[in-house]
Length: 328
Image (cartoon, rainbow, N blue to C red; front, side, top):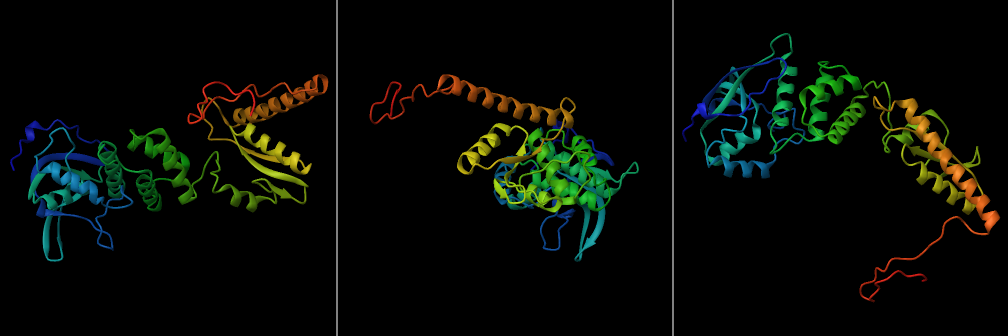
C-alpha cells in the first residue's frame, strides 16, 4: 500500500505538554502497544478497552486505503526492549486503528509522531490530555462519559489536577470542547462522586440523597411517615414542586396527615444562582397554595370546583370513536 503524506488534510492536534514532530510511514511491528496487567490494550481515555465490532468495521475501511482527511494514529519515539523484541515507537492514540491494521494484514501506516512531557507539563498529564483531544476529534467512536470520568479520575489520583469540581470542569472545558452539555454534566458528576471532590455548590443525585439525609438527620423522604413529626416526608428537586404537592394532597386525603418537604435545587448558573433558585422553588409552592385556597373558596361559594372534565377524546378506532365523548 502506498501513501502520499502531502495529501493529508487533517488538523494536527494541539494539546498541553505535547509537540508535533513529524508525520512518517512506520512499520507497525516497530510500535509498542502499552497493555495492562491483564494483557489488554491500555488507553486511559477508554474505560472498556477495545470494541471488536468497531475494529471489524475499521478493518474493512482501511483495506480501501487511507482517508487523508482523518486524524493519523499518534506515536512517540520511545526505543525499548520488551520480551526480547525491540520497539522504536510507542502508541499513544489509535489502538482501534492499530488492531484493525493487524486484522487487515496491513504492515505499515502513516503516523503522527509527537513529543510528550514538555513545557513543564508531566508526561502522564500530557498523554491523557492528547488522548482525550484525539477522541474528541474522532466521531467514529468518541469517548464515553465513563471513559472521560476514568481518565480524569486517574489524573486526580496522580495529583496532576486538583480534586475539586472547578478543576474537573476546567480540565474538560480545555480538553473535550466538543462534548455535549448533557454528557459534560454527567462526566463532572460521576467524577465528583467517584473521587469525593470538593464542590462549591453540591447537588444531590437521586441515588445519593437517601444516604446523605440519613447521615445528617432523622428526616424521612419518599413519602415515608415520620413518627416523630407525625407527617409524611418528601425530598423535592427544583422543577418538581407541583408533583410533590399533589403527592402530599393525596396522602392527606388518604390519612388526614400532613407532609413536609426537603427542597434542593439543580446546579446553579451565572443567571440563576443558588439563592435565586431557592426563592423560585418557594414562590412556585406558594403560588400552588394560593390556587388551592382560592379554589376552595370558589367551591364553597359556587358548589363546584373551578375546573371540570369537558370531554374525552375519541381514541378507540376499533369501535369507531371519532368525536368527543361527553360521558363514560
